[in-house]
Length: 165
Image 1 (cartoon, rainbow, N blue to C red):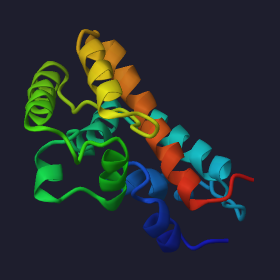
Image 2 (tube, one colour):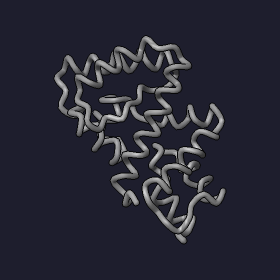
Image 3 (tube, helix red, strand yellow):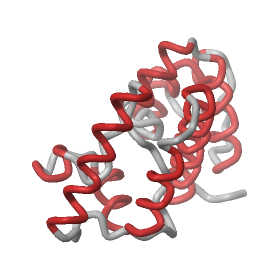
Image 4 (spheres, rainbow, N blue to C red):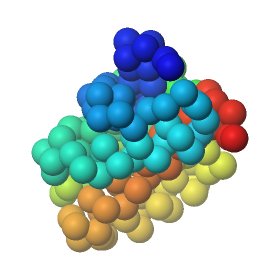
């Protein structure tokens, strides 16, 4: 069985800057000997969903703005940097970057957390289209969508770290 400190060190960042999820999954006995995508993702998601709304909002707020100030300053986590680069967000024109900054600000103003989307397989145009569509959602709709996207990001991160079966 993997030790708690090893588990948290390895999987504590799967949910952006939120090691409490890995800690609780381990402490609650949800983690067994077999570390596969499903055997880690399912308990982590269960802990995320069981967290208080304030804790879930904290997880959402831990995510960086897409093409935002942390990206410009080179301060993204390695996972976030790779994810944003895979969608071309590190190669935006000045006009595209300005649009992302404008949408990020409007989104955070409306919802109180950053726009979150699992960018794998998407390009900057797909992301902008999703951004423009989702900004019209109600807060409840967007909270549910953002949480689902966080779970999808966690799954993608685990898929790159673990065997599927």
